[in-house]
Image (cartoon, rainbow, N blue to C red):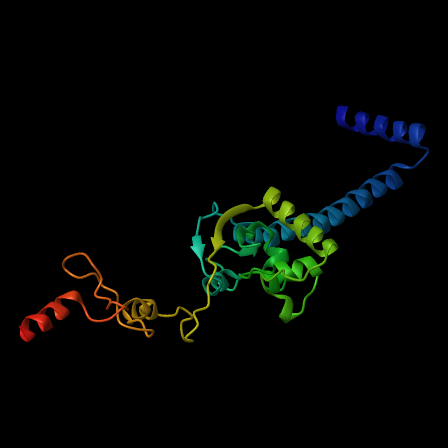
Length: 230
């Protein structure tokens, strides 16, 4: 009896406060619940799908290892750090100074807009903002003041953003041509060469020179002639 009286009271309250019959009221509640569960199932599944799809990407993104100093290497050795090997750092050089640009792999790594600069000293290309192969070199001779200023801006940017890990070894070309140094033996020959104008004027043992007198035979020779006449 108590439950029946409660139900009659609830029906009267629904009619008074909502102006709807109890059947219409409960039908509306049922439809609302059905719409709610339908929408929640749709958006809830998409959220769970997004979490499942982003979880592998988050696992693939690993923290970058600390920069490793490579020291002084040649330009040929620098090519090994162009990003083709994911286990090696991504390096790039400006004015013979090597920087680790691994944190900007999206720009300098394979497929990036500046990928052709990686693994090289492309100072000339950066100064001219050129993407031609002939400018991918460290030679900055013949650049104008504006190009040198642009290169300086690039260097300041790299110095403030990336870690310097080494330098590029300068290679000096070796020529096989003859040496320009003349032998010194000629000077020695000139010293030992006798004078062409006359006999050497070396002093005799008694300290006088062996030069003949201009007035005639010596007095000793005349004395010996007089002795023969007697």
